[in-house]
Amino acid sequence: MIDVEISSDYMMRETGTSEGTQVKYHKDGYWYKLDNRGREGLTEYLVSKFLTFTDLSPSEYVIYEQIDINGKHGCRSRSFLKDEEEFVTFYRLYQNEHGEDLSRVIGVMDTMEERIEYTVRFIKEVCKVDVTDYLRKIFSLDRIILNEDRHLNNLGLVCIGGRFAPAPLFDQGLSLLTANQSVNWRLPMEENVRRVVARPFSGSHEKMWKYFGEGFHVDARAALDWLQTEPQSKEKEVLEYQIRLLLGIY
Image 1 (tube, rainbow, N blue to C red):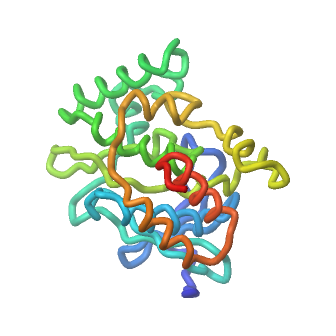
Image 2 (image 1 turned 30 degrees about the horizontal axis):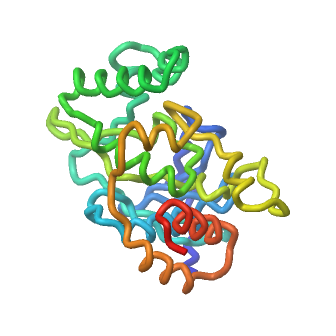
């Protein structure tokens, strides 16, 4: 594994709607993230590698590699922004437009459908972009990987010259049960999977996936063949279980 030393001059602390504060570094076109609550670096690597077995374009997702940063485990990815481009989250767009927290605004709505439709409508009105297909891909992925941290700061758009387009899929580190404190590995995998709570429109990945529909095709057999070459880990076991369960490969 690559081990890099990065000065604190490149450190950036991110706070927002996710739990806690994560230390990140930005240097020479790369983002570096330290493991914070689990094995997020391993998880980011496994998820991004899994996406190479889908029919999504490589430009639609961020690739992560495991790396040690100042002697601690983490991962890195190339910045997906080109010169003069800016990433704007759904959270920040709403703050800029209305001065309120979008997660709190939709949190008091009665149904998942209301929360989704309100958010999609807001983005379309402000940015002239229909994010339905973007969210379809997001929630198809999150259902498979059991992402528990799809907050409104890792949903967003890339902006340049006043024009907006959906950002690539990124920040899947709190998936594959890596940091779920309710997990008990003495129990069957099925029972642990039931303990996952989704975000941001519903606590159920299944409900959000059913609302939007399937976002991409997976070459499941090829993905499973690849997983057999990876070192053993609980995160790998979860991904294999989900592929077999949801994609019907036994």
